[in-house]
Image (cartoon, rainbow, N blue to C red; front, top):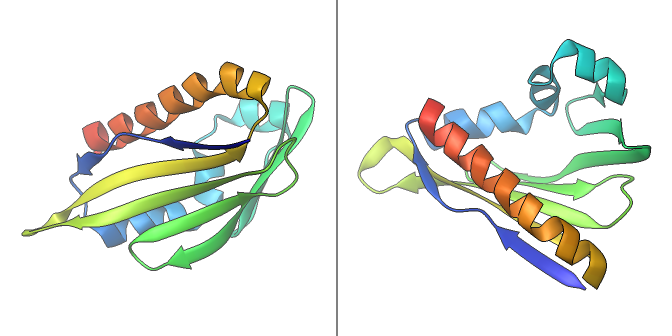
Length: 136
């Protein structure tokens, strides 16, 4: 069953190109993970993808499309279920140093997985958006 989960929107005090550039290289995601966790999860990253082992499952994500300074799309790359993620970096009218940031996740989840994961995914997306807004 196709499931769409959208984060809230938040205004980040950075220009769209600055946020875009921070997320376009998957190695930046790996740098945010503490060193001991990198080893625990067998984390590996290159410019286009990140792979790890989470609770015994190989999970990977790769960039599927980059639309400079406005959107980055990601797709699963060896995960237990099909999913994609779209990060949006929208300019705020009249405010060149601000970005309306949001994230959408599309996932193929059966009923049981949807019940177990949807709220956790929603919470994680909102925390990420809040964190960027607070620190941006």
